[in-house]
Structure formats: C-alpha cells, structure tokens
Length: 188
Image 1 (cartoon, rainbow, N blue to C red):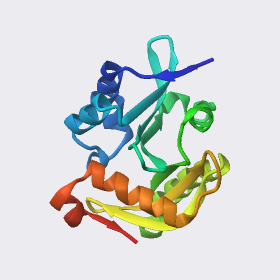
Image 2: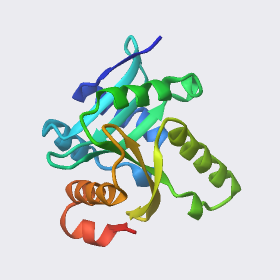
Image 3: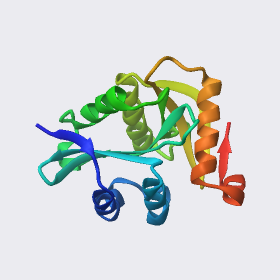
C-alpha cells in the first residue's frame, strides 16, 4: 500500500533529474531553476505516492493566488507500477485535498498525433483522466511547439469554460512570462 504525501524540494529535485527525464519528452521538461523558484515561492505543489523511500508516482502542480484553478504540470507513475491504481490514488488525493475550483490538465492533443501508435497512447491518457472525473474542454494550447488538449478536473463545483481559459492564461503567463509567452504560447 502506498502513502500519498507532499514532497520536499530535495525529493522533487531527485525526481526531476531521475525518473522525470524518462517519463517525459525533453521538449516538455522545463528548466529545474523554474520549478525550484515556483516551489520556493509556494506556488508549486508536489505530491508523491511512496513506499518507504521509493517514489511510485508523482503529481506536480502550479498554483497562483487569485487564480481559480491549478495546473497539473507533471503527472507520472513508475513504469513498473502502472495499472496498479497508483495514478487513481494520486488523482483522488488531489481531488480531496486541493484548495481550488479545479485542476487543469494538459494532454498531448490526439488530433495532431503523428501516427496510429501515438494516437492510441494519447487516447489512453485522455481516457485515464475522463474516467477519474475530468471534463474535456474545447480549449487547446500550443506551448513551445507542443499541442495540448485541456481538461478540467472539477474540485469545488463545475466551472465555466471561460473561467478555465482565464486560469490557463494566468498560469501560462506566470510560468512563461514576457516575450516568451507572446512567442511560444498560443491558446485557442
């Protein structure tokens, strides 16, 4: 049985330089200093499913004062534990403990999958979130060349799609400020 708990900055750093490099394409991993800054500012939440010292899965979220939603920045389960319910436990924990209107989730957009294998993998990810209460929105984003579909996991109540969009814009502006936001972030 795993324990779900908040992760220390040192644990987040170990995940970043360890399993995260295997769990995500390089194009989707932001520089460590950005995660560290947000964590130290109290605007980055890291939760892990652990068995003793072993990290079985993790969820990293961005939050901002005055923004109605959090953004699920990274979410992964150890390859050897996938399909064991760890991901469901993490999502349930977030739903029970997050102080927010909802959690926005980016998944690689199935509509721009390069091939059938990629389409199947993206569909599997989308179904994971849908089966755990997420709602697929009509919002799409493109961040540093990666196309995303946006889901909302309602926490307090159902929220209007316009509120989800406003939260996403605010969170992206925080994470990717200034000219980089203008050049590398598109929301439609």
